[in-house]
Length: 194
Image (cartoon, rainbow, N blue to C red; front, side, top):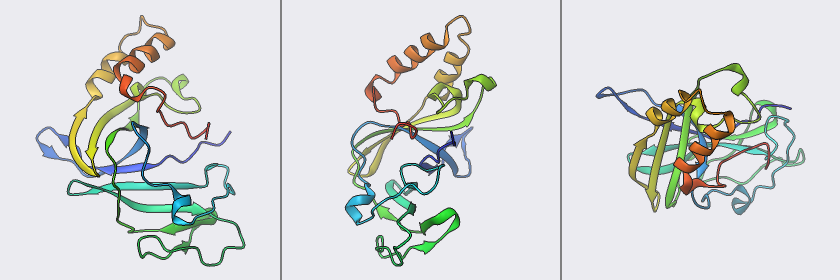
């Protein structure tokens, strides 16, 4: 089974009283319905690429506090010669059969929370069809109202603490994380089950 390309989120995290460079976080959980659905913009997705069964992947970012779709990569039917523009940006044929839309800067009107994860840590056997939240070094929760960031919470230390509970079984650790993030119950992103 091919590893699937997740959606990424570029984000600046305050670290030791100085701003670190923007790093790529995986978008791991979404509290409410996500506002960007490619089909509503006229894209008819196909799954030409085994690493992206859903037919697209995205890069999100924030401009000041506004949530933006920064880049969009989509696989379309081979007969498509000129796909629709996205926020005034024309698609360009890219690597692996993807059409690429860069610098889209489409504001997204999302109200709710998201969980971002970066830097997998832990034993090799933790790797599975998708990683669990406590298997990441950096875990951030961002909350938005109408696409504007209203709060951020760094859960990295709590996830490290859960990783340290070696007397707990794998499933007990999973239940602890599920309880901790109960707001996101049944809302974790698993691109293998799409």
